[in-house]
Length: 140
Image (tube, rainbow, N blue to C red; front, side, top):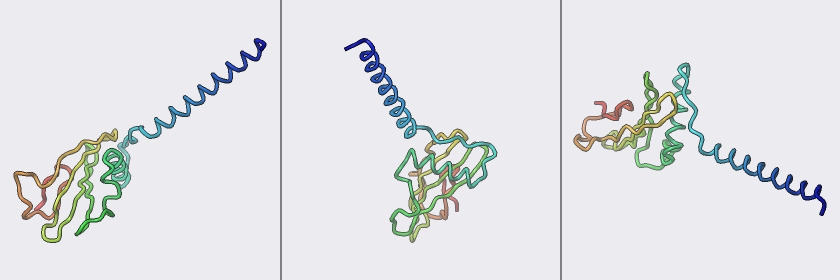
């Protein structure tokens, strides 16, 4: 085998190796990239959508939340303030308005912070008609 053939084979192997690495790297980055940051000019609807996407990517059990099966339904409350977006994923009841809620805060960089759950173990369910997504406390 001449030197030209050996060089050509080595060159092809290197090119294929680099191509495979680039493809693999782009695939892994596409699945692990953090959520897009929320800009200061984002509308409330856009901020709610991007906040939900960030939460539901990190916590897949909340994906398609309103359509998950439950006795009296489920809903998501959203609130926006200077620190970012806040979400309360609520399981509704038939006697008590809210059975359980899990709340999250999403900052302008798309980072998700769990805020807590409703009801607080030191409190009761009684008298609350809704949950404030900014602090996960009941609203009377």
